[in-house]
Each structure stands twice: as structure tokens, then as C-alpha cells.
Image 1 (cartoon, rainbow, N blue to C red):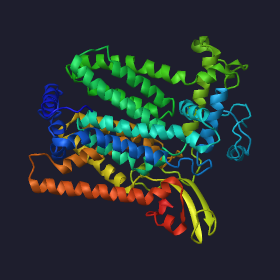
Image 2 (cartoon, one colour):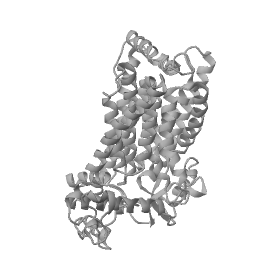
Image 3 (cartoon, rainbow, N blue to C red):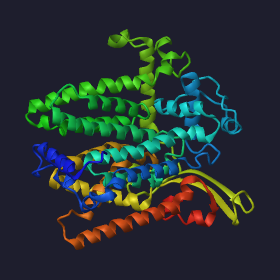
Image 4 (spheres, one colour):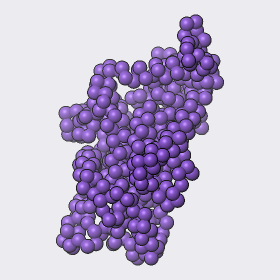
Length: 524
């Protein structure tokens, strides 16, 4: 995001035009994004430019830090699935594997005794990287303090805001629009809540977006250098995708989506069928081994232990592999069996839950997840009404969310009409994060999973907003309407964010005030 002069910016546009992608339906695949909208034209001159280039992104990061860090030690209780992850994280940090806990472990934890793990291994349904991260911050601070066990997710939530600005800039080459994408995520409820609780999905979102950034950089590198095998950014994407999968297996879908895109979007792959096959092979060779090594490295605690779950499964009579795979070390055989058990759990988990939401409901925002609720009466701390409550409702900013879904539909139409690689990149990332969940209609899943693909919805919204605002060649009246539309939208989005803030942070409020946020029946 360097501060270029106007001449340098024109040179950037010319350089982009020189590298247009063969096969695109438009004369210049970069032109709709790099020739500038009216917003870019207005912000390209004078002292405003310096603020737009540096001050505005810094302000967005400050907003993200404030909304994610202030008061994260409240409520002083284990909320929702923190009951699994904050304890598993501490056990993993100390033992190398997840442990069983006594039935009153949450009470012991709240009383300041985090070392009550029993030492016997428990069956964990997610890989360990996210728990290693949470455990690191518990170790650096006080594991029984909510601030410590939530600090890791808060920091990654801030990094996610920075990453969406970088990704948007790589797509649009516009700091103002990149800043807008970061601002939308900084004030969005889903982004805020998932950065303030000790769950894993914020890590999934970050590592996936980091891989997306690396894939975009690789596309530029391949187009500029023509190198077939020396692809440093693709190697980096492999590491990021391995880390993503090491948090939750849903990272595999991003790996598949980005792997396909990195081939399809490679200009050199379109020269012939052989060139396409050649680059597909290269991409698999560069991405998959590094992703696998990264994934396996996060299990080092399990491999080094003697008591990890199923650690000595293959040592038991009758369990070891026979036939072709019998040569594998027993530790690897045991690990494969554990992975099979985790897979069986994921495809078979269908127990009912009050806040379960099938994937087809996610885009409509029908059933957000209640992370925490505690009622209180008049005279209790903070309660000034007859009945009060403290609630954490993981709900995206409704206006931003529904507008983003509409923008994604607009991008589908735009891709069909113009075949712009930027639009294709956003849509394939969105598809990788969302579409696979539609294949599991009976599985118990939740709305908060959407944080993994929400950044791409917001980028879609920014691209749509840019189209609404228009370009310098449009009529003045159209540009004025675009400005007013964008301004009103942002003002309403901020107002809604402020209104929902108490439900993002678990503040004690009158019950009537909390109920006023239940706009749809499924929101209560």
C-alpha cells in the first residue's frame, strides 16, 4: 500500500494492462478495477490521498483492536464451546494431547484452578493447531483468566481485518476500497463475536484468507516471470492451507478451491491442454506436500506422548494393518486410525441442538448462535429493570450481511457477462467456504461457521459498491446518487453495529432491550 504519485499510479495501470489475461471477454481484464471509480478519482489528489493511503487503514485497524480487545474478559465464565477448547488448549500445551476433565472442571477453572485435567486422553474432533494457539496465550498469561484464553482469537481477529484489506487491495489496487472492506469486517457482529470467544473458527478464517492472498500473489508472479517451478507464493499458500486444515478439516475445501483456481487463473495454463495439465501437476506437487507436512507438524505433541488418544492403537493385538500397508510404523497406523475415527464423527454428528442451523439458512441469517445468556433481577449487579440479562449473540450485522449476499449474486452475473479474474477469485473462495456444507443437511452445524467465508462476501460487497458509485466517465447525477447510497448504507451499518454492541459483548441490559434485537423468530 505504498504512497505512489499520479504518474506512478498510471504506470501501474499500464503495467497491469500489459499483463491482461488471454481469453477474457474484455479487452483488458484489469480495466474495470484499475482505471478508477469516482471515489478513487476524488481521493487521488491532495492531502486527502495521504490519509486515504495510511491514516484510514490505520484507523480501521484501531477500530478492529478496540472492538475485539476491550472487555474480552467479560463475561468471567466459560461460554458455549469454550468448555471444550480452552481446557483442551491448556491440556494440549502441558501434556501434548487433549485430556479428560472432572465433571466440575468449569467451576474449578472459574475458581482459578486450571490444572485439574486427569491426564487420561479424550477424543478430540478437531486437529490441534487452534488449541496450540489458545494454549500459548494461556501460558503467557493466566489460564484461568478469560482475557488470556480469548486473547489469541482476538489477535487473529485483528489480523483478519488487516488480511481482508490486503486481499482487497490485490484485487482492486485501491486503498480506499480495501479500507472499506476492512471497516465492514471491523464493525460486523460475526467478526467481533468470533474474535471475543475462545473458539477455533476465527483461526480457520485467517489462515484461509492468508492462503487466498498468497494465491493472488502467485498469479501475479506467474504472469510476470513465467516460472513453472519456482513459485514461492504457491509454496507459502501450501503452508497456510496446511495450517488451516490443522485447525479444522473444513480447511480442506479451501485447499481444493484455491488449488483449482491457481491453475484455472494462470494465464500460462491457457496456451494448450498440455500446458494446463503441466501446471496442474506443478501446483499439486508444490501445494500438497507442504500442506501435509504443516498439518502433521501440529500433531507433534500426540506423536511424542505415550497417552494420546489411540496413540498405541496399532500395538493392541489384532489392530495392526495387514497387507500392503503393514510396513507403516505403528505410530502412523495409530494416527491413521485416529483420523478415521474423527472422520466418522464428522459425517455422523447429527445430535439435535437448539441453535443448529443448516447451511441453506446461513445466507438468510435465520438462526444465529447464542453463545451465552444469564438472566438477572432488579438489584443484581448492573440490573436497573425488573428483569435483565447478559447475552452474547453471534449475529452478523444484518444490513451488511444481507447486502453482501445480494452482492455475491451480482458477482455471479458479472462473472458470466465479463469473465473477470478478480470476480472469479472471490466467488471460488466463497464457494470453497460455503458450498460443501450444503452436502451435509443432516449434520449438526451452526451459523458461526460462516466467519470462514465472510471475508469474501464483504469483498463482493465492496466490488458491488464500487459499481454503484460509478466511474469518472459517468454522469454527475449518477455519481451523486452513488455517493448518497454508499453514505446512507455506511451510516445505517454503523448505527446497527452500535445498537447490537451490548449483545456482542455480554453487557447486562434490561430484558426488553435484549428482546428488541430479535427481529426474526430464530434470533431469540
